[in-house]
Length: 478
Picture 1: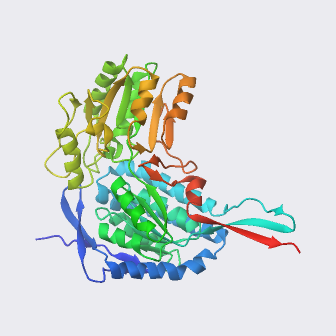
Picture 2: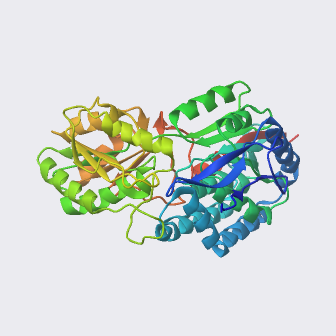
Picture 3: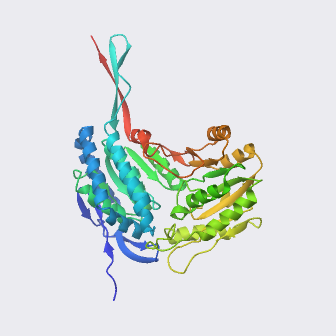
């Protein structure tokens, strides 16, 4: 006897639809490795339909008042709260995340972020009007850019969907959003929630693979392409968007340095850093996975961190004692395993370094020491529950190591010396610098990086402004 698979569908112009050609993708629960649903493999016809719907809906949505858009977003936030348990169930099946942590750590901030952008909708400001040439008054208008093609990742499918659609809708844009092919379930549920609130065509969801995302970016209708994903994917999107000069918003990979000085409370730093490194199985662009420790406390720090890793649990969603669930998919498990298997001879696995169980894609919390700056695992993003530790001699070397990667998303400094913290925060070439903490985010503050971590900001007024364009209007007073 077989269990019937759940059938997920696209949401286009207010209706749920299969792919026009009927093609589907199997969706796997990463905690079990078993297929539990199918989703559409959207092709060009589906992309055309979604873009046409978003384009047709744009003029009316653009012309709504900020107060009207605020009310809509507040209704969406309320609906997220009312249907939180459904969202949690879909997201945990998507990802294998622990149910309790999903309930406490992801749903509340996601709802708060929608409400933040609801408020931001009423702050579409330009510079004040004035006469900068005699007899002429200038004003600046902030306007929505138009249709936004958005691609969300698999590590935080629900929250990253919020980071995409909330500022876009608040600014008066219409949206075509594609979830990852491995995690479509929560986004399809979001379409059901939002679809009951917004006019048809304002919010559309296309399921599919990389070819679907490429077709969205290459389509002539969108004025903006926004992606959260790998550096490789970001480069492809930027190159594709350049063909018709689309605006691009990229939030890509990270390799966050965690710089721990000798005056740090080791026990407290280990406790916080281990959580920030292993949370969500390390599948976070800002994860605290590259630790740099002053040589005078290196050995003690490594010993305590290895002990913390050994005490950290991974397991099923319904286990209240686990910090994280499985890696998202089989390819990601192979990637993480490959990094550890290819460690150079001078590296030492202090804890973990192996798969957990034979079912699902679980990987043990892992600590690796003895590494050099040019080692593969230092320079490249692992995106798994693996924390590396390097030793440094002084502040200058710490900065050299910290900045010596191609990523520049997030970083942290651990010290009781205020002047040192200020020097480090100035010199660290990363979009975010935390001091004596790592990984907290708030809706009011910007998130985004430099270098190969991309450009553009999520969250905050800066993230909101990224979904607007600036127009100068000059009027003669004669």
